[in-house]
Length: 457
Image 1 (cartoon, helix red, strand yellow):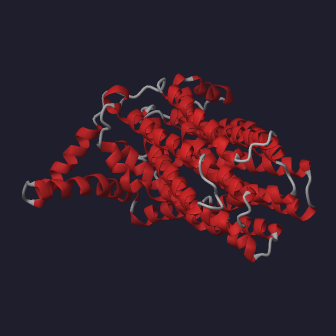
Image 2 (tube, helix red, strand yellow):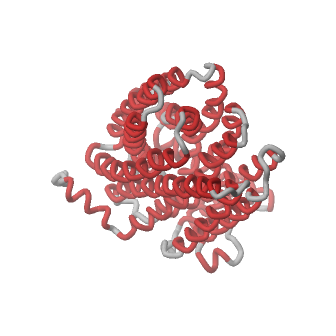
Image 3 (cartoon, one colour):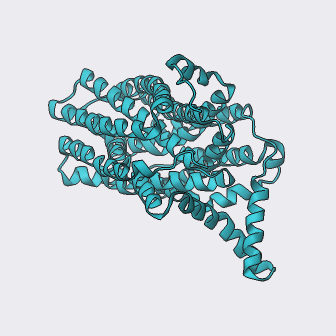
């Protein structure tokens, strides 16, 4: 029976669920590390005199996010001594990764980029690996906060996860930029190194907040995985150390992949993977070089913090929540078409800013428009993937789909700096090209839209 469609007010009330607050915090924990290896690292290297190409290629460390699904089965099964018993399986992994990031920030505070660039990038890679590993558990814990039959709550949870991610990213960026600018003004030579110590304190606060996120005590996930292992082991014809290991590998890695293709069909599954890979490439090219563009066109760190971080965060929060409601009422596919088209158009605003020169008004308009479309696109994307996930393989399957999406944004976008250099610093043309990059994903989605099985059991 088809129920009465909810009003916008009734849909908005879904956000009052206490689980949404917990998901908000999980999102912030996930988004914050991107400040460290994204805008903070890029601006640090820029102010140390390194080239745009070097900054762009340094972004290859983001590539680990594209492959974290490879070790997701390990995270699903291996328990952390002491931490798992005291905090729970998911939270134990998150705390371990947070500690790794905290130690890395302390090491960064002692590094001179011009003298130890290789070491700096290596430590950044450790942060990226810890963050990517943490994301596997964060996403699984976020999905497991909501029952499989709560479709509207899942869409709302996706919105809150996105709000949380952008909160961690945007507000973390505000703290980083204002702290670095303050330390620079008072004469601290290694002002970025000192800033990373302050950001380490934020990591500690996030771990304290994590203690308020409940983790389900009972789960049949591991039981079902072991049952899959037994079936595979039985088909192998014998039981010994080697066959046990083979069945474990096949059950935890092969199982989620087979489940995904079996549910959607081979052609549609490939179409989904193609769309996931291509959807945010244009946004990634723009985002990777945006802070370098802001600096070159003449904006100060304070102005960047106000317009790109603080103002952008407020806009993102509001329109992500609205995007969640839109996705609940209109469906994730329609939301992605709308967001994809707007995403392409808003990239042109940055081209206008590049062609007309420094303008705080134009800067504000471009940033607001970009954040609005990014909010709609991201919440639809997260809800889309969450609805495809098999609860037996929550961490592994979500990590696989998210990693494929990240692969397009990180591996290809790492050449963004080289592209600007190839264009001889023609930022206007660069932003026009990022607009064109959005189109292939929308074509891909159009070809599969009528055969998608979102939320199908």
